[in-house]
Image (cartoon, rainbow, N blue to C red; front, side, top):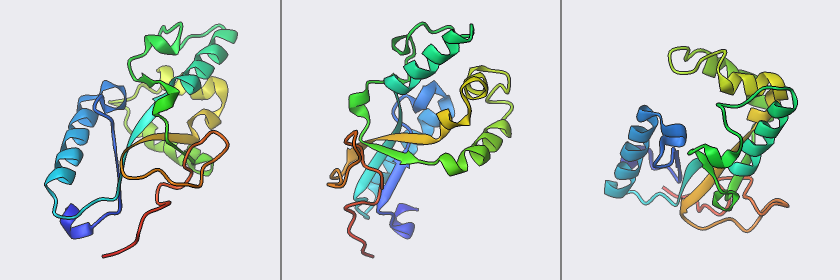
Length: 162
């Protein structure tokens, strides 16, 4: 598929599958192996990440209203929370949050509608799901960065070619 489509950028889960979901772990393995055996050289590969600072913000906000997030006292308690130093890019997807939440609700067998992820969005507002964070695992970081030093365009610095 990579040789056929010739993507310049590949986005997949990290080795932990984002939050340990077996399907996501396998998606990571397949995507990374496909990128290794392909004859097409993908210029940039990103893994999605959840920065500790963002998760901690959510935990703190939920504590203020007397609720918790998966029983965690701290983002350090959650295996999927990554140190902010792993964040190389942040994409603002706030205009698409409602569609994202609808898509998540459609996976009722995998995500509990009354579970912690929806509790987080219900208590903090949907903006908590608006930004997507990535770590660059292959390629060069773009030179145009936001005030936090993050890329805001995953295609920045990519040379378009066939």
